[in-house]
Amino acid sequence: MTQPSLFAAWRAMVARDLTLAMRRRADVLTTLFFFIIVVSLFPLGVSPEMAVLREIAPGVIWVAALLASMLSLGRLFADDYQDGTLEQMLLLPQPLSVLVLGKVLAHWLVSGVPLVLLSPLLGMQLGLNGNAIVLLMLTLLLGTPVLSLIGAVGAALTLGLRGGGVLVSLLVLPLYIPVLIFGTGAVDAAISGMEFDGHLSLLGAFLVLAALSTPVATAAALRISAE
Amino acid sequence: MASKLSTAWYHYSSPKNFYPLAGRLIPWFWVVSIILTVIGLYMSFFVAPTDYKQGESYRIIFIHVPAAWMSMLIYLVMAGYAIIGMAWKVRLADMMASALAPTGAMFTFLALWTGAFWGKPTWGTYWVWDARLTSELILLFLYIGYISLQSAIDDPRRAARASGLLAIVGVINLPVIYYSVKWWNTLHQGASVSPTMAPKMVAVMLNTMLIMTIAFWMYTIAVVLMRVRRTVLERERQTTWVKALISSQAATGQTTNSRPGANSPGASLPGEKQ
Image (tube, rainbow over all chains, first blue to last red):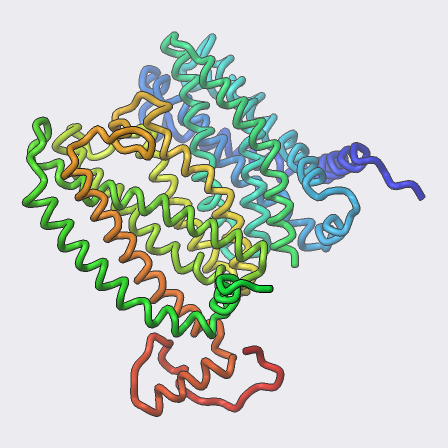
């Protein structure tokens, strides 16, 4: 029997995770509604004045995206770990980091892309317009994959631990901070009409760096956790 | 043929041999640390001249900068021990890594705290979200994350490997802290001391800072060795040498660093490790 190619294995991993996510659409939608609700809390809790909201909008939307992304990390490995599929993945001849990259891609497609698509609506709700909304979408498009990639490391390290959800946030939020800073910095620069190329370049650099290094770390963490 | 150095290396990588060595070294490090601290504090208050711009409030630099340097150095050493423990499966290296974390977190907090008190008279604010302060805060979160991940996992081997991986992933924060004042034009002042260029401060101030740094370093080694001795006793409590140690100290009535209630000299278990 011929061994499937690396690309075929990766594609099968992505397809599997997407299929499973589609079967449990509720999990996906709850994350999305969490995002919407958190953003909606700020006008109620801070101030309904458009001027105030416009100032805090990039930060609020980005932090909400951060938290929503972090909450959805529980779905990444926990189910496979519980029913033993993760062990089988560890035994596959294909390199684990490639399979992890496939899982993270599926996770981002299901959890991150809806956030990106919904952000213009929430941006308008908080008083952003024009260039700022475009940049908000762009920064979230570059940033949410990084959040999924870094979050995968945290999820793999805390697999099966008690108090897992809060512990993951403690581990992963410090590593999210640079992405947050440059994401909101770019949108703020767009609002005030300044240059945002540097911020976008750095976000792109984070994406490349994360895509190259975090799957390896995640694979190592999975082996540590699943023994 | 093994050289003398590599034999010593292997000899002391066993917790049984390292424990008495550390016990002999600890008092020396305490003595050096206390002497250097006294000298350093004397120099920082009475010898170092008044700054022409900041007056007397700058003197906190003699704690702030050494603490910040130690916070970064300890993280690097911790990650180094984590790598050794993961690559060569040396138990003692894992124990050293976990012993370093609390001291590193303490120095990070000290750097942030003294920095806040320095910032109020000079910058007018206790805190500002510039690159260096933010990345040092991230370092504190990394230390706390490391400690909580270790305490969340019961199996010491898995705990050491998982937190070691976290430490290694977080090392990328260190160059960010160090170069943040060069990459971003922010409120925190730029680098005045560098290994390659001549220092931009008066020799007396620089020497005082270096003395305090070495004092903190010696303190760190003393405290970490004490902590790792406790960890050794706790993790190796099933071995004969630990049981013999505890029973002999119980017999002579001495108190040790070991946990209370571990004083019953039980029968040896079959097949236990040395």
